[in-house]
Image (cartoon, rainbow, N blue to C red; front, side):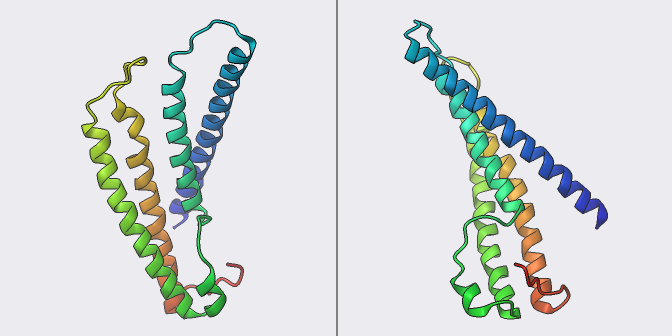
Length: 168
């Protein structure tokens, strides 16, 4: 269990650093583009849109993994307000996580197919589109793993094997 927590901490740090670095590079590239266009300097950044497309896709998917890891994703708390910290809430939470896991698995399968079977190459960078799409199945694997973790925790809480989290 200690090894899993250490691996989770490392994965969390890696994704956080990658997300911040991705956002910083994206911001710098966009700022340079705005400055060049505003100044009227006749420099063509033909690669700009392709790089922004790749960086933005990775930023979104890395952000989704971080949200999934921290259980900070969007949720409707109507049932939480009605059930509070009772065992029934955790059964409902396990069901909701199971529905999310089905979606993530579906997303994993079809995004993997998209990444592997994308025949196009980017016109300027000459990179296969599949490399740009690789962020989806890679991040979907992590989202599946974290969702399985959340299902297990919710079931254990519902069964009374884990203490009910009063701060959740």
